Length: 323
Image (cartoon, rainbow, N blue to C red):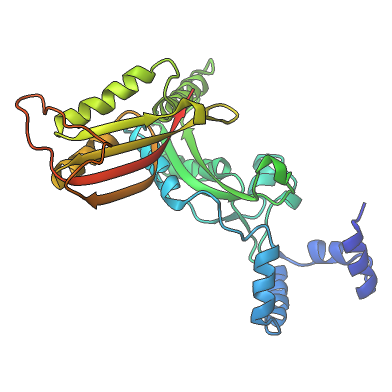
């Protein structure tokens, strides 16, 4: 059944079988040329004010509410946990038209199709499958008996055409970290089982690094105290569990660190903090210089002899994630 907008278009043109004519009588390249000319003519009359209006109204073009820095932090964490034989690749924003509908049995109406016989990537796993197949084919050409496996991954931004419930905070475009493995059929589902186990293991490792066990609060605080002592930093830790925000599968708890010491020691502290086996989303780094701590922090020992603490203050506000 044709939708109302399509029925209106067919009525305007006076050609009731226009979709059938365009899809059945024109080759993909001919249809592409036609659509390019249509959009070229339409764009010639568009004013800047309309472009701005469309930007405000079009849900496909709005930026993500999550900062780019947060995405980069996650990507670096995920890539650092991958087995060495995985290769990370940067995918094109576009895939061949029909990639999702042919490989994932998804309606093309839910995909953003372009006028150049391509579609905006809506599922990077399908796209990775194509690249794995290309690399596997090239490998078999040089060694028909090859049993090596092609392992690829990518962190990619996807966009979907269907409407989402805004109250559930779903957006038209989002980022996912995906894995794909290709290899020879080894019988008894061995290849499939091995690959699935490896993929699940990678994701579990990522979750373990991101989330702190709710029963290990003391261990987390002791770790922070340890790196402060190692760098001769005075530190006050405020981890207020009463401010925890309950999400679907985790709790987000704000962390407030007040530190004082020599500038170079504070930098070393930050380096050690970044290398911890915990995912901290830092929202604020604020340096200041003062001759006194104002009651915020107290002197500590470095682990050898008591050393001057220094007069550079650093405040860190971060989010921690607990399960």
